[in-house]
Length: 108
Image (cartoon, rainbow, N blue to C red; front, side, top):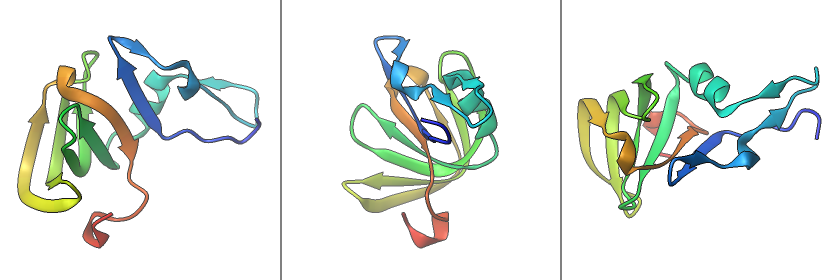
């Protein structure tokens, strides 16, 4: 399992899935909190319980998973619907946060 990378944090009724933890090559365990701290300022995808995706730069995040994003794009059924300068998402609506695999300009 050495070198395995997990880039998604999910919540289910307030508990974080245990599959998030990863073991790096130096045998240190990375917690979901460590992951969330490490992606601040990076492109992310935030999926809501409603199925809507928000893609943008993660500006900040609190313990309730309330999220502030910059350069945010809203996708409904995979189609770009709107662009926002800043977006604020209440944590109880968040299904998961994932790091973006490509740049926002590529639309993925």
